Image (cartoon, rainbow, N blue to C red):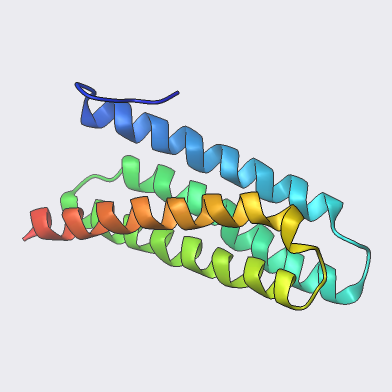
Length: 128
């Protein structure tokens, strides 16, 4: 679902909640498809933890009771998105999984990081 011109902040928040949830599900599916090697499992678990945490923390931010709590939870989602990118890049660079297979997930992680970072900057500005 794309929310365009005239959409409310609530519509955009719902869209981003769904997008982060779908990202988390894609991370779970990626983990299931990893080779059964020690390094794949260790790195994969890191991606699994941080990638699913993006959605959980954004959801928590949307349920915040104050602007300060919203900004704090959003900040955690930003950190988790950035960490997810790190682990995905490490999976690629260590040749555990081909870049071509990981590229769509990495692109989505970078897009989510950009969106969440911009939202976090705005939230911190409005918090003051």
